[in-house]
Amino acid sequence: MTTIRFHNTRTRRKEVFEPIDASNVRMYVCGPTVYDRAHMGNARAAVSFDMAYRLLRHVYGADHVTYVRNFTDVDDKINAKAAETGRPISDITAETTQWYLDDMAALGVLEPNEMPRATQYIGQMVAMIEELIAKGHAYAAEGHVLFSVKSYPDYGKLSGRSVDDMIAGARVEVAPYKRDPMDFVLWKPSSDDLPGWDSPWGRGRPGWHIECSAMAYELLGETFDIHGGGNDLMFPHHENEIAQSCCAHPEGGFARYWLHNEMLQVEGKKMSKSLGNFFTVHDLLEQGIPGEVIRFVFLQTHYGKPMDWTAKKAEEAEKTLRKIAQLFAAPILSKPWSGNSTIDPPQEVVDALANDLNTSLALTHVRTYLKNGEEPKLAASLRLLGFEPTLLVEKFASLQMRSKSSDARLSVGVDAKGDATSLNGDALMKVQEKLQIERQIALKTKDFSEVDRLKAALLDAGAEVRMSKDGVEVFAGADFDASKLEGLA
Ligand SMILES: [Zn+2]
Image (cartoon, rainbow, N blue to C red):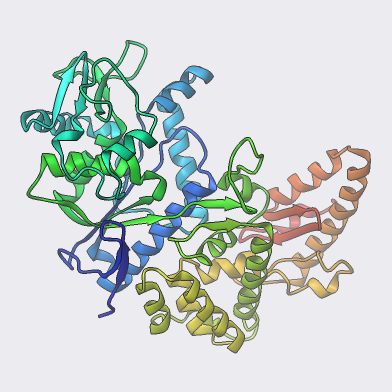
């Protein structure tokens, strides 16, 4: 069996991964707070742990891995959004949860086995808080319940900081009901206009940290294999999770391997709204950057290193994916597609991933298979890395008819089955050329009505339209219907 090694934040070393139970390998990852679109940093965490999940499934078997990623659907940011928009909280969280799932699916992220929502586990949180009070690790005061940090001597070990450093470095809220400034909230009172649940301490709602401890305990037990998250969560969130879980269930020891992904920058700068370089996954997808391109760019950098998102990297990734798709698509018209072969992924690719998820080396192997035209190896490696070859062909192998056009940017796609019929192709080509011309005019006149009309008609016919500063590209989707384009061009 392949030996997996992970860098364990807890020990600061790369260690051989030995699961507690190889027939049920268990991983918990902190999920999103659902009040807004997922930004690129959120997506990097999801893709990083998706790779861990895929590797574990490959090595231990898909039925022998349990991956839990939560949704935080009770939070002051959600309450603020509801107050700001006048919309019910449940609408906001349901909508945002679905956005997250859709965006992550576009990036090839598998759904975890369990996606618990915090509000479904309030009873378990209350039970855990009661246990912490009973064991002398927490106290109730003025409708709040606080965790007593001094009661847990190992506090700070994960991030390697002393409590004094943490007090100095954190903006610790000094509240009259706290015995010590470091103590953190397990439960807080809710006014009538805020979400709340009855509890032994009055109507209230949980603090953020207790959610993960309670849900991990309920779904994975008092000890499990891997806990993951962005390294911005290491302190205080993960320190607090450890303190709660280890004090409530001292015999368990909580998670054994802690994995943290590094942060994402954009064009060399920290992503921030004030710098104007803050964008969501949805923003990029809307701009016509396929999810596969985003995933490919992410995987080029090791999850434990800072990564810089640049437009240049996205362009290069798209070029490589096009080459891959063209290699797969080339023989379609004459013989069965070899990309469908289901050989095991090459061991060197598995080994790269098993070495603390070295996705960058895995992609180097992928490029070699591409260069050598080794399609079955390429397809099997891509599947392991979360790219479905059929989808790559559908989205990227659109250059079959590119030479027909005077503008090299113009292209017509083949559909999912590779049926680039000339009839469909001609119809598309004509409308695409018209769209290109109309767009050039519109860019001068600022009247986009004709462009919008053509684009709507193309979408209605099942075509995909991508516009960038360099031109217009139109692709036939799986349900493309050329007859709907009649009379347009
Ligand atoms: Zn968490």
